[in-house]
Image 1: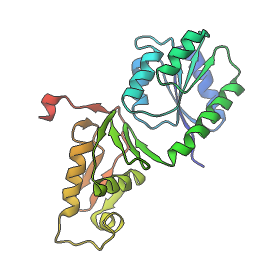
Image 2 (image 1 turned 180 degrees about the vertical axis):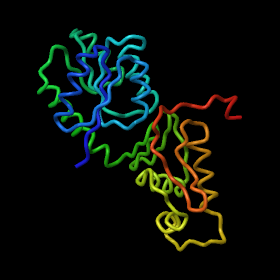
Image 3 (image 1 turned 135 degrees about the vertical axis):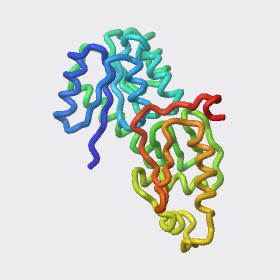
Image 4 (image 1 turned 45 degrees about the vertical axis):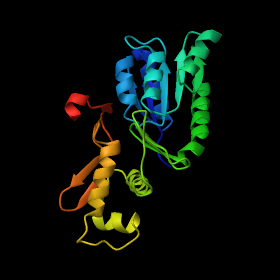
Length: 239
């Protein structure tokens, strides 16, 4: 069983540390951020299974954080924590892109139950969608987007990207790609794989940072999980 990874965005350090300690005792991996901007940066890495988000954050507030992550294409379930229990505030939180709402003070057991419910709710989606950072691939409608912008891929480009996303951080030789994606023996005299890699880079990688597709000289390619927030490269830089 994979360890659940949770991001806690809470400006009250004592509260954040209390939640972190409780979740770690449940066997989860926890990262914390104490302000909205840091929360956005960590949230956009896409490496978390769940996000616990306080609304009253310094700088960028929780509503803005939720909207920013959704606009960036991040689908990670968000549980809002706040002392504001008005119906209006709950509606605003859910409309910002959050999935559930828990008011302070709360029982830790209830928070755990809500996190489990959110995870169950997304498990069906996870079987039909692949996501790495802000890159999302839907296996049902065959839509691909990065940073909230949709990319139009051919069938072979889609198959190549799907294979990459199912094998992140692994060195994949041209022979492996030929056999698994093209379903044929690798021909050393053709550069078709390199051509399609370039097509794919142009559509989902070249305009963004960090880069996902990396050349491993003399061997093949690696699709790297981002360790920093993704962002669009300025047009002046891209040109």
